[in-house]
Length: 449
Length: 171
Image (cartoon, rainbow over all chains, first blue to last red; front, top):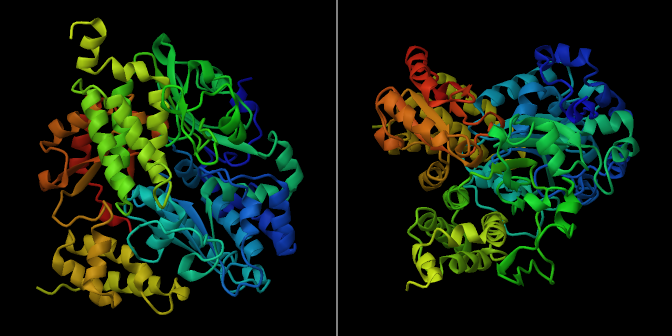
């Protein structure tokens, strides 16, 4: 039996079940039972279960969800829960599928989480381009109000809970949680300086928890089956299952719910059917384009939050050959699990061209607030473009590394790093591909100059 | 020329304003929704359309202008009935999105970019639309076209001519 079919299904259980999109169909498959159970629990006990579950944020940073919830100052008069449904990290296509197939699981996960956080007015911030999913979600929310799962008194318990689907209008940066909050408040989507963190001072100045779609969809299962059993599904400090989105040069691209410890080689060869056209693998982006890539020799590492940051089989990203990039305090950068978007490139891939496309994206999406990011991403795009098109100059490889180094750590939000890290990663592992594209460098190498 | 929101939009804006009680009576959180509605009612966000948004939400014109020009889905000039969003980001690029984009330009008779729109079509070179497992992916209104090949494009364009999928219907 293929690995993908053997995995416990938590959030993709209803994929393909059209009926489950309606509230009646959802209830028929056990929907809203977890909410009924949760309403009989103490809010603190729900948070304790989520802590025990080792659920980690599925949006990109992998932060422990229960710990995040614990940051809300006790006794806050008004708390908000916001679902980040602004999925737009290139290579990531899970949240859109999740909302399309199982909108009520998100609604139920949000009501339970709001109950645990004592949050009254809650929002789903959905990406503007997801027009189809926006309508599906709005219908689900309406149905939940009609059934009494939302409103002035949820199922007669006295718990007041409201949920509003808020539509964005096209801006990658609004996936950054503080930019998202600004956008929700009706501002331009510029990220805010932290601290204060949203859990202390967020939406409208109130403590606010921002969680990803997949993260919140795991909460009903945790309440139903207990945090411990969820934790046992995964290795180490990572509980549950993980959705990966496999795209690029594989035979069977797809959205798969998998055990967390599975290796990249198994994901590519077993789950996704291997590299297409009988080609070989060259590079793999492990979790959205913001993360440094893996090369062929690094694919036996498990697709797990901690392993990707610390496994010594993954080379350290460098700012020059032999000179590791310092993330602060001497911490080296390997890579991260990110958003679960795995992009596979075969050995026919034009790496400088692919990198240019990635840099073009970040240059387009930088909000312009911080100079290092605004100017830096623009220059990364320009220089990587001229290299990709064979018009690079001697020293361009060093220039790309130096621009990246100048951006990283010097901007309010992580968009700067999101451009700098993959640039450094590609330069470290595929330096020859860039050098070979620079005409003068080639001439010099052959001794003709 | 002063513009007036349709009755339907006015009602929607009033209802939405109720959803953000923590905003302390400010209707600011409704600005994105109001801009989407303005784009539906007036076709595009002219200066007058922005003034109508500022008026109905009791916000400074400068604020509305600032927000409208930050987000890529808002257009300050008229566009085609269909906005075809062709993703060319990494996953789609690796599976031939650039050829798909060129095929759309040929079949629609317009080049990418809002400024090149005709009455029927606007083509946008879009960033990742979260359909990477079915690359190349194309979005038009609520309709996704997945695993698109260049030779399918003429038929897709014919289909959209017959059954337009305007984004403005989603509100």
